[in-house]
Image (cartoon, rainbow over all chains, first blue to last red; front, top):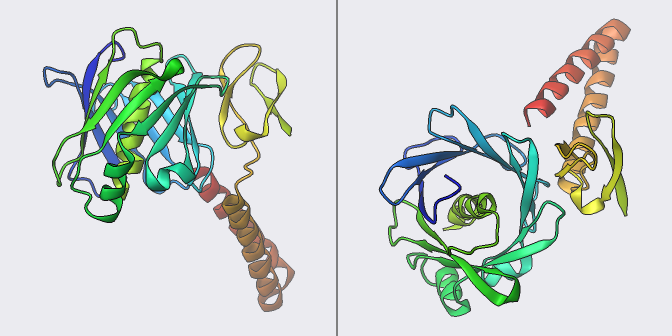
Length: 188
Length: 88
């Protein structure tokens, strides 16, 4: 799953507790499943190879309970190693969703930003029917990936496209997409 | 500010305070290690509320059933709180 240049994250519709997300490859095959666990004070999201949860790939866990400017650590479950973290920039995200991608030493390696401030304001104050788009910007202000929400008021779908020479760990980009679907998608 | 983290391999090392409640890699074996000590105020508030509730219930049990009742209540509540904290 981590070598894909394009994938789609789709929120599972009929789910009472927690949240579930399927990850599809460009041909429409399920290549992963993510589960946001219910009844957890701290956000706890797991990524599996399929929806039977046969093999856990990643674990995404919040450091704190209050998630205003929370950081989420991403651990490769197979290797048992932290691959990095994602930190939501709380104040900036009030007007325009903004995240930082950190490496395993907590150094910022990229930023994830909502496409435009004007559209972000329209989404917040007028209608949330306008789909969100995010840019992943690495060092040197180079855009290395894009995430685009589909226009669908009922099902959250996020299309992710990664450039060929993207220097960011793809596990972190997948985690960012799932977090955006789980955390920012919840605000809609 | 820094705090200490300890790995199952026996290594103890310093980490930045920002990592409190999070995960870091062990400086010796490289495996993911949980950093204890949540600096989160909401977590502290919850812990304080649980401790206050535990003390009040134990005191109430003491006045109602005496020392044996208080000890049993304290033990049962501690077990419940431990189970809940594990589940969270």
